[in-house]
Length: 628
Image 1 (cartoon, helix red, strand yellow):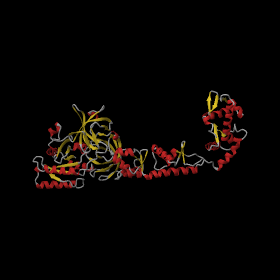
Image 2 (image 1 turned 60 degrees about the vertical axis):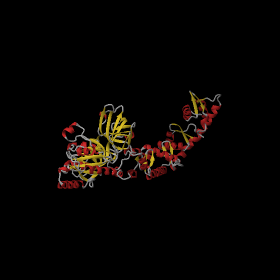
Image 3 (image 1 turned 30 degrees about the vertical axis):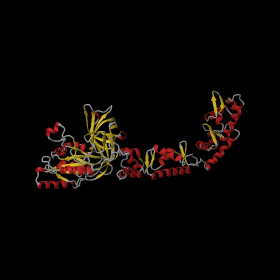
Image 4 (image 1 turned 45 degrees about the vertical axis):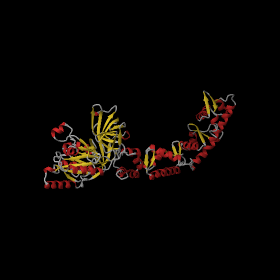
């Protein structure tokens, strides 16, 4: 268990930690000289329950709230300290508000300096404390009078801490490993060491880790967990990690960085969140509101964009947080907002989405997704709105393999995209319905364009998932890919009544005396008084139906004539000693002009029916049946 102190300056937080653990958490010379805590202090002790409890001692000065926040992010239990001779003070209230915004509901109150207050004074301050706690998560916290000087109540407080430890919810050690860095320093003979609270997962000596958001790769050389040498550090423990790596150095790792499993490294500069504004704030939080964001030990500048109306004091609402620089975060992480002058706490909340869009962030679909992310089963609620990237969902929540499998168990995964069964069914039915409607309206077309079909489906899929869906439907025999088009099984291009009438006028010219040199598209258009585009369209349709072949541009031959010419080529080749023949031999047999004869032979070359060597050609026996 990690215990964090909170309370006004000079109310005896550090002295109380020393009375409980025997360790002076003030480690800096300046702290000892001035008698106040300036930076985070740490102490560890077995309080008698058989486990080591870690204490994070924070400064109580109003100008050091940012340091207090750096230590409060990873604690399990709050130890609120109020001096019996002073009572509730401004920093007591601000610290209490911060603990409440961080969602801490387990805590104890130490009524310190009890030796300086009589029974009436103690009762009066206790009433003040109860009134201050009334609307917070610590409303029912025990209040224990103690004196670090005389030892009064220290044993009672120690017993209460032991009892509370049994009630603390243990963090899962199976999730992705994350440690929030609050110190980075160098030890002679060891190298770079970082300290912090393990937020989730576990780490072992020899593990490879990443320092995020910088992306520095490192290897764990040694571990101290709860101030004891260990081979493994677990969620809920304070750990010191001795790190090694090419870019690892004390100055390269900063307070606020996260040491994590490499698969979790995905910094973000934009986060959607729920923000609760304190009722002490003077005015509503509007668009592009400047603030300082604190998350675990990180502190950085931010702009707040409400995703609805401005958020009034004492109210909550969804916001988008635009950060000055990237941070490593996980969905569900708590955060605190303070004003840019660091004079007051504005509010706080928790993260909902680490990959929100910069535009169209207030659309109904986007707001529905944000609401869904707050549900007890977020994935199922989000799938009801639309597809979810399963890998991002698991990574951004640092889920364990078992938790990830459980979360995704009810989803249908298509190329890494999670879909609800209803949405997958709608997509499959939508493909069939869209192709059926397209075929009914376009008898003359082989099928529907792939991208056109994608844009017609709901929900709209990214291209990788869409192509994977099409492959699955094709493998199941429900659709047929046809080049750049898609069609239903059994669909055939058919000419309309008008097209059949035009084809009937064209066909005699393709089968007559000039069948080896038929008119071109322009000739038919002139003779029939029809638009050239219409003639070309109908002839290209007959080509898809196997009735014609386009030997050259706008020059169509009947398929039966193509077959006749192939027979002629057989005869020409058979009449030559080695099977090689020239273009004039073929030209003479079809009584055609040289140019058209060359176009016909080039057509057969393109289809592999003839094999060319200079001016000579011979037949390819493996392609002789290509045109029937």
